[in-house]
Amino acid sequence: MESVVAVKGLNVWFGHAQVLSGVDIEFRQGELTALIGPSGSGKTTLLRAVNRMNDVFSGVRTEGEVALSVNGATVDAYGDRCDVARLRRTAGMVFQTPNVLPTSIRQNFTVPLRHVLGLKKSELDSRIEAALREVELWDEVKERLGAQAQTLSGGQQQRLCLARALSLEPSVLLLDEPTASLDFRATRRIEHLIVRLKESYPILAVSHSLGQTSRIADRAYVLNSGCVVETLDRHDLREPELLHRLAEDLF
Amino acid sequence: MRRQTDLLLAAASWLAGVGVLFVVGALVAFLASRSAHLLSAELFFGDVTWHAAVFGGTRVFEGIWPAVAGTLTLVVLSSTAAIPLGVAAGIYISEYAGQRFRTVVTMMVDVLAGTPSIIMGLFGFSMILLLRQTFMPGATTGLLLAAACLALLVLPYMIRATQNAIEGLPLSLRLLGPSLGMSHTQAVTKILVPSASRGILSGAVLSLGRAAEDTAVIMLTGAVATAGGRGPQSLTTKFEALPFSIFVTAAEHNTVEELNVGFAMALVLLVLTASLFTGSLFLQRSLERRWKA
Image (cartoon, rainbow over all chains, first blue to last red; front, side, top):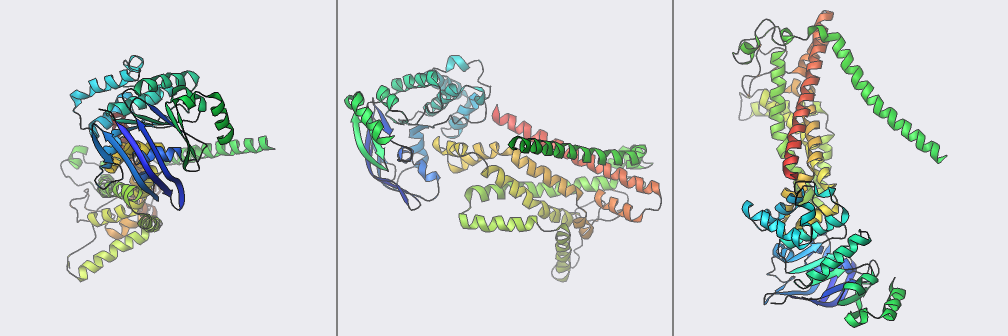
């Protein structure tokens, strides 16, 4: 069954400052939906609104609806009956800079798998291997799962974070500029991975680069000052002139 | 100009580092020079054998064993109370308390940290007076009271160290737990506290050292110059302790050799606290290794 996420009439305030106003977006399986816009336009806040990560900060107020339809059942992230921990597990998140635990590679998986999913020791190995294979990291680390995760390269760490998110079997992926801190080669590798993953998960990704967006996105929402100012489909994203105008206007 | 400032700053930092080494080295060298000839089993146990003194309960009148045992017991008792309580309070303040409550409690902890130890001793002493006048006429100063007052003395260091260690963790680590679907308590116990364990350890080291060396608190709450030649016998009895014995020796010695015994006790106290630090360091490192593996 397809998974779809629909955001309707979303308003977010940090203290008295309104960061998002009346945002409507949607993203679905088989598509990579990008959020683009200048810094401070509310891209990350919008991404974090989907799994309620904004709630971690004090003084944040959110209004509106974020409906996740997974396997035919719909949950409103801001509804009264939403289990926030479960919601965050459903929406796997990868951050801008690789956010590994300062522990071994294996422990990066066992901490969430044991404490979030309650998996037994015997179930861990196969789950870890499957996740690492999915991000094409298994062959690089299978001999040294006990090594510190921070000894991996930036690109490997980011793939580890992606694998860790996937190991929790999410229904949706939220990526916050996942290639921002990586070099050209590592960036292309992650992009290639993301394109493959969008067949299985609806992906919402913040991107800092119009070039990247036009390469891998199927749809893009352009944000400015907390509002969606333009929606681009696959056709628009391949229009050099349109992209050029956007670059002039926004950045 | 800027280069000169840099050089000056580097030289000053280097001097400060070397200065610390020099001061500590000079201190140990001085203590050793005055007491090296005394360092033997006799210093600790006099003419009694060590196992008779430690396990047989034979009284030691010519050695410092009763004071060593007293200090060890005091440190263990006060740390057993102060370290878990301090860590728990630090976690609560940094992770669970509301903004207003946090501000008030943090201020209170600072006030407690600034309280001179003699005041803490007086507090314990007055408490016994109060108890004697009310529902415990038989109450008297002793080991438990001294340990409790010492625990109160080191509690703020422990709270502050834990709070600072947790609050100093990077935002990325803070976001990680919730982003993986962990509950707040899971994120605190499985990610934040283990990540902050080195900072928490430095608080524990400071607390152990402070509890081992403090004299003002124990002299008002149960330490005595001679407690019958044995280590602490129960939680309510008077006891000997190294810092107080050092103080008494320094104040009342008749010969240079008696004073040298005081220096030997100081050296033993130094070695004792250093061993406690090393022990806690190993404990923390092995816990950390287990978490990281």
